[in-house]
Length: 151
View 1 (tube, one colour):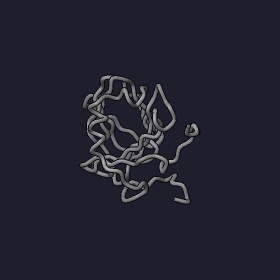
View 2: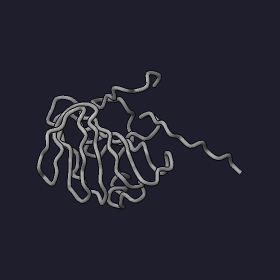
View 3: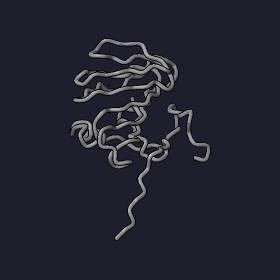
View 4: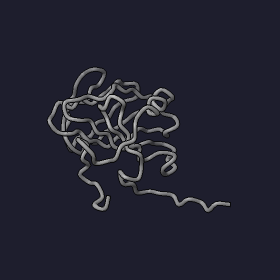
């Protein structure tokens, strides 16, 4: 019998796949999942949106929050833009369409958390993600200010 894998509780961006949408408008890392740490009531990660771009519109059956780490822009709430900047926390109710609009000259980086396990996010999102390509973190416009020094 194979030894049981140690449970992980602390993650660096280099510990999980760093994914980019086919159109290049968003980079994402799913850091807290059933697979990475056994999370049963949440999924969380980091989202990056390049300057002068916007990501796809999203909607969930559950609540979501964002903490903006770097940059500024707008988050739409059912099509209505709200200004956000580093240090802001945004609550997104369930069933509300939303997206990030980065109208600045610098990348937008946020921590996000959805209050459900990854496998319950829905086939639409999970199926779309299969078309996203894995890239190296800290490349191009998505410089991560907290990248481990040894990577």
